[in-house]
Length: 253
Image 1: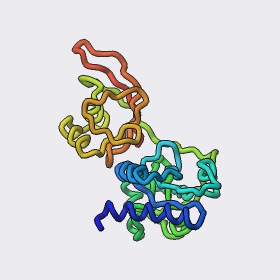
Image 2: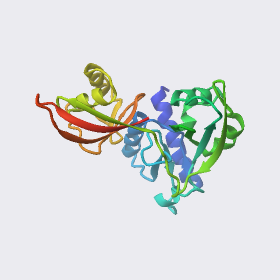
Image 3: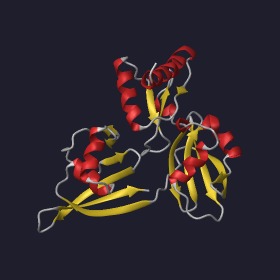
């Protein structure tokens, strides 16, 4: 069994547990590439009683939540039923730590990447989305990032929960609003590398892999380059005398 078949088998197992035990079940976290394949696989098997959850609207990493007939999507989003919790981390007198710092420290505890969702870093620490089933473990064991001490607490997700992300405004000029041009600009990579990323299906527009290099990016499109982060393309701000267009976007840090 290869990795893809194993992934599908685990997802289907969660679905069958939901059907057989008549209870809500969930998977681990998957990235957008895996989610696209999984949703296609479930569609082929006419399985539709599930929702995707990442803890907040713009989440890149998400779990699948299967629910039985007596429940609906709203039931899965309650703080009691959601399989996701937020590990709110505060640093103690350390310099600003990065996404990589936090993730590396968590992997150092011996857990797999699949139990950790998005990591939202701010000046005082980070909000880290984790499987609720492991929340006590992280509170008790996750006490240091590198050589810096941290404190943490679990925040349950409900309707009042909000994510505050650091953002960077991007203003640039490009030849056109083609996807390869925009990806090159907002993620600061060459156009050739942008085109290769699109071919490799690791560029996502509004959570779907986009393989057309000449796709025209529209206002409010959410762009994700796996491993590089996410950007919202805001608008075109006119053109230059040389015929290039001015763009404005927001990058989430």
